[in-house]
Image (cartoon, rainbow, N blue to C red; front, side):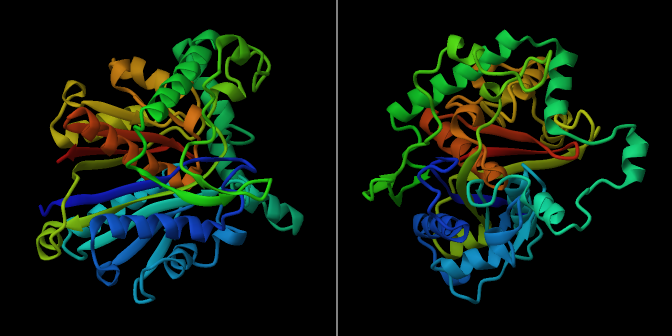
Length: 391
């Protein structure tokens, strides 16, 4: 099978809700990342075959051929097509899968895969809330679905707590994991670990000053177990709080995927090779446990074991998700989210997939390591898993 290579991988620094990226239109956020990807690769923008953009809340500024609007806001010529996809939190990881599959099939040679989510300008749940406001059908779950699974609704918060209960995690374990996420992210920032992956953006502060946004805004270097213990639990009798869940975040990310022929023709320098890909689905009620079987599937497809993988990126949607993943797969915690995760760095929904991939590639390169595995839970009980080899 033909190879698919990643030749550049970038992301914006995360912006807190109503924070530094609030003034950026989502299309411009995506365009800034695309421009950086093309510039890094040193490739003619006109040779890009397609742009695949992940986005969850496709309404308002993130709708009407959103991927195409990102292209039109970028340095790419208007001859480059684009499409927008939604696989919930895994949208841009799926964009990477589609890009790799297009290249591996021989149908395309250079594809941008990425994602954008401005959770300030287009808040989570906007499509459903808009439907309610216009008094049109707002429940995406037909009564037949709810009857089949015996539940009145499907909820990620409920699923996260179900996983915590299934694996026996306490609030103290969740708080300790979240604290470590902030500590690792703060330490990584201090030593410049994110410098090569972040696209610096000009922003205007509340005081009217133009500054450069190049540091993830959600990291709390002063976080403590005491401060986390004071945060209200998400549910009565539960063990998860807002402090142990991913942060609402504005951001964009992307990777440039190329075929072996394109690498030679355009004198590109690959930074990673796609080893294998998988997507699986399971119980939509507990919903967020699927990264476990997805990891098993992609390892089996690649002919690798957990011990072969040097670093893991498992999205920190809630602390219970990576903790359950570690426990179920007997994974080495020292290899997991080594520069922190979404609890500290933020989870810009549709952008998180290629955001984590950018971080994984640069973290592997910085450590002189070889294999990385990325996976994340997704709405509806789905999970993507990807294995890459750094070159």
